Image 1 (spheres, rainbow, N blue to C red):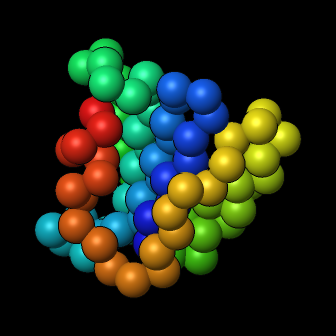
Image 2: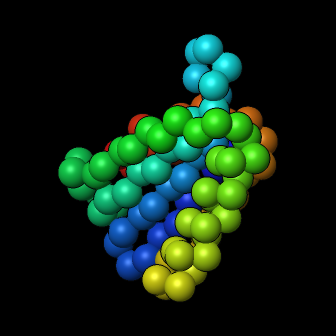
Image 3: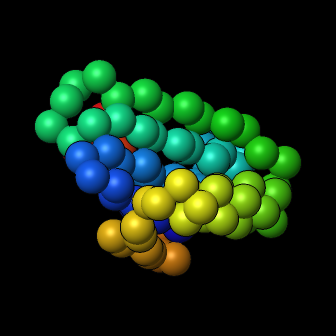
Length: 86
């Protein structure tokens, strides 16, 4: 699952995925579009449902802060977006 937000020239990406050992990871990537100074945080979570709860909180916070969802995918994804914008 992946959601990508934009606000002006800023981006925010959230990605839920499994690591090589089957554990769940919540990844956040933020930065300025076109800049190489973005930040990526990988946060291990206990379960997929915990990751979805974390994502729901982030969706509410980003909407409150004026970010607009540009892409949403509930399908398993590769890390292409994170690598492209990081």
